[in-house]
Length: 274
Image (cartoon, rainbow, N blue to C red; front, side, top):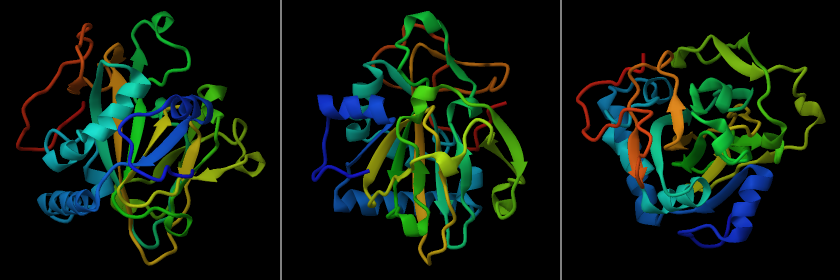
């Protein structure tokens, strides 16, 4: 994905069309000082976790680990989320995904099947709109050599695909022995045209929750760390039978529905979902 030449605050019509056509749009958003600040934020998170693996211990912890919330609340990121989702939306989760040298990578998947969110009244929302919009913030440079994620442009238009759990080795420090992957009968990467989401540090991509994507191993000597941030419109409800303790943070607009409890204050310990 070729980035624009300068940071943008809002998407133009062509970029909005690109998101809905390809399922992904990317741009720079952070100044050099902010790039360094974001790296320091991740180091702060690592210290607060006592050096525990970031990828295993940061999912939906932005209420506890405030540096993650600070990244998710960047005005330029929220401007683009508003351009795609509309004026009323919440943040429901962040996740540091840190691939050090030798990391094995992640399988081909879509985001939507893994998260218990759906439009409460499907007939009233735009068919092409994502349920969850993911912003992927590059803390380090992400390129093909260190395992930038690959995706299939336009694959989100094919709908939700069937996934299965398959054994995986090399992710033990993340507490993962099985990983959810799209069934090969539904998607064969050998027959797909793939692109790479290469992002310099300080850039951000936004992708549809039905976009088919995955990342290969990191054979380089460089870390590839990013923060995956998940937003949804206020008419999207969490299945409370799956995550009964989830609270979301209203980021812009008004919550006219009250489908999900809101949080406003940070907490002193890890957040539980179930």
